[in-house]
Image (cartoon, rainbow, N blue to C red):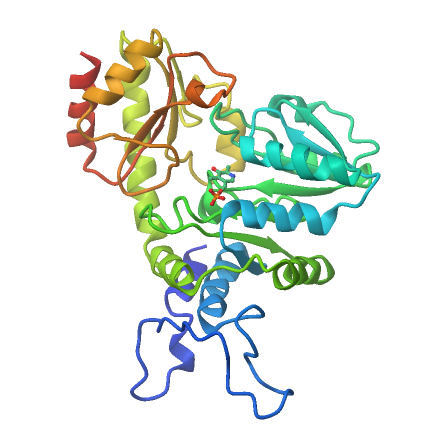
Length: 363
Ligand SMILES: *Cc1c(COP(=O)(O)O)cnc(C)c1O
């Protein structure tokens, strides 16, 4: 991975001519000089642009797989699902996963004749995948942070004749590598840690099967679900510092999770990196880091909201993976978690300053 990260930072170097800009130019042109149809690198903005090509080159290095980018995480998830499923087939989804994926599937796949079945993330460990065309999973689940063995699910899904799609948003390719563990497609919202500054929506699909990826690419071109150049440029910039940001975020999350777990005001604490956490053993085996998300349960909704209001260094917003630490009471969206459950996304603040603010707010 170290070499891939260095290659990613220098992916344009070899192609530079004397006097070329070192950082990526932002190309907004929708049309390209096309005196004849054959042989042009770019034809029209819906088919491809130099800015997408650059960010896809970075992501392809990180994923070690062909990558197609989308205007949001949901754009990527839609592409992967619609390119993989037909009428009469079955998809298995996590009932405790990202809720928009479930709403999309129920609202648009079910009416097209796809059988949408939902099971809790932990049940993937024992589920029978017979009859499924696609097994779709998220691990760690969001916001519950339950973990399931990706290699084991892939082996059983493949034996049953299904392909596996993994939403790897919470981990990024730096912290978890589903394709290396047997998954057929990875989908991710680069809106989160990869873009990293809470100012761009973006997503990608990666895979190592050329036919499958061609279908995903066709979906983008034909459905028109195309990323904007500015967003591609912002994600290109964000990816250059992803490793450094993640290092700080994960290290701080470990410190803060440990202290929260011991705190009297905290009734329950989930962080895959705590040895007492039910996800610890599998996470230590399957992930390259424990991430920056923490699930904390306070006494009730009022106490949780008051904590978020009083903590100086927690942004009260949905979403995660930004430079600013953020907190949100997830029951307000209807997630099946206790009323006092707060999802924390740890940012890049110096950890002791962040902890003092949190300890003060808990008091
Ligand atoms: C945010 C998120 C998405 C959707 O990403 P958007 O860019 O908001 O469309 C999908 N899956 C997970 C796990 C997410 O956290």
